[in-house]
Image (cartoon, rainbow, N blue to C red; front, side):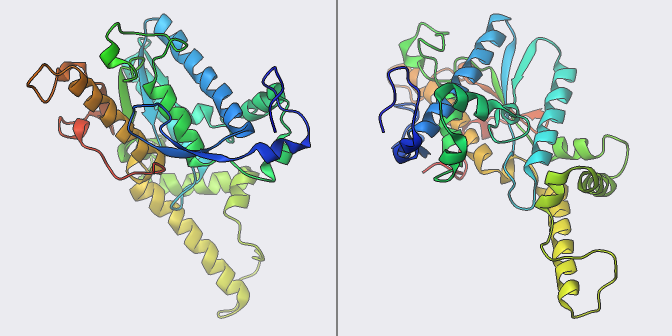
Length: 324
């Protein structure tokens, strides 16, 4: 269904316009994803404009801009709300150490379907005259939708975004950012031990508190049919359901005790490759005739788990996440 002249969508047939597209979000930048077209893409484009506006504001204030790459979606035993809590904690901790001269772009604050981004999707849909309930009956956003958006936010420096270099060879090489920070296991552990307890106690206390006070959290880890109150007899269906709940709790503990970091995040893997490709393009595009590489001093700085990345890591890619 074509859009109205003002760029909005009307009528129940808007769902018929939903399709998918594969390609490079930024032409010439060698990472490809698959994303939704139609109303979903328009919603994400409004979100992208909001992100770029916030980046421009930080640059206008002469603050160093740092992108925080962190797990957000629930995967491998984790919970998206907990990931958002950890990302916010890490953002605050970094700004407390680094001071007001820095600004951190925390993607957890822009996740359209999370509590952190509460109202953003509804606001964009309302502006575009999109019936979200109806649109969701046909499809939902995917990792490819988000990575298309973040690739454009991190890589582009077009006329609308505001150029920061006169060198055309450096066009679309992340000129609006000064560094990437990849969340690591020590960042996660710092979140759980902030009250002075052990990591084990911190994770268990967090799980118990959220289950008792957060209905969404409790529903996410609920086992249908499990009845609490009486100790079930061994070998019964209730005993089996209780064992299932215990395994879910242990998976939560295992994930946040040992795994939670950019190492185990599909999105962070793609963002690592974005970071490495930005640096590769900066080097190769500034190389003099007869040289393979240009000036390494113009590369983006990179941090992981509290420290600066070693030289090899700033140039080495990793396995893909949502990228094709």
